[in-house]
Length: 417
Image (cartoon, rainbow, N blue to C red):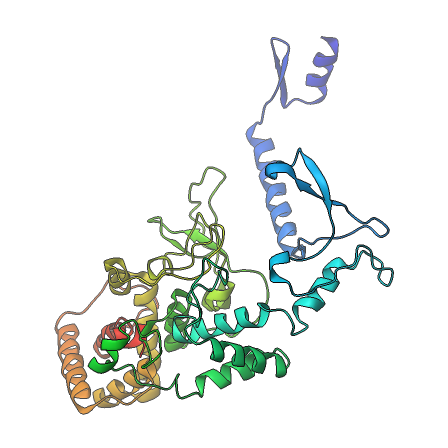
């Protein structure tokens, strides 16, 4: 058409074929677009991050009506249901239909007051049980997500009630509650097994001794960061991004893949953020962090009431071969050598204290010293030339790095005893 011909005349990068207008990008125009794409990307990086959250709101003056759905079908609303909590709890909660004292209906505020009034039968007990679970590996109620008829009965009901009462009387503060638990005689028991206790309580449900428990996946990663001296104590901020590396492992890093999932070859450094606590690492169900997954990171589908703790071969293989573990063992060795010097005896003691919080016994010190000297001799006779740029090069540091990795891979490091 004449209109299309004029369009092509005015814009030479357009072409018409059988009535269809095509965009034609000559080299000069491609370079022009690349220039502006780069400027646009640079400008986007200077844009402040969006600070948005999902929230629930109510329109003032409009009290929503809840209906009972017949057989659970939302297309069959029947009787109107007044606001309130589960009738089976019988806590006497009074939730207003529309509180004239607040701009909205006030239902959620009234229920929040009811939950924290000290009269609710579950809230304080559930919170206390959850804290107990994290310290002992098992709650006073072994089913922390089910205090109902299908859950287990508490092993120590009077203790649960007393802790809940103490928790509420101290202003619902978690720190005094945890101090009370960890300074108790029950928490400070030895984990040594005894035949007479095993005969009457093989599962240690009655807490005749302390149960040995493995560190959680995130705590293992944070502990490695701490021993290497790299752990960042930076608070708040955006989550740390994750990405697949060249072999498909999910690691901490900025994802620079294109829209087809192909690696771009660019590496954008994260700086201090790469060494922040695991609490800040992005969690995606489809991209579990490779460092955390073998150690039973919580499966959030849809949520995790209680973590599983397994002992499987991939855990040992990860501690032996994972790049993250190897790099931080080398960093720990470099730090200890800078602080202590080259004396093998002093290095053994410093590494042991750093990993286990105690001085090694004489037999452990002697075995560690023999291992370290043997490794120093090996690396002296067999220099390693293909190490990464920031890796230690001298034989003593290389030998100490292998010792640090062995210590951080041991049960003494991975378990609370």
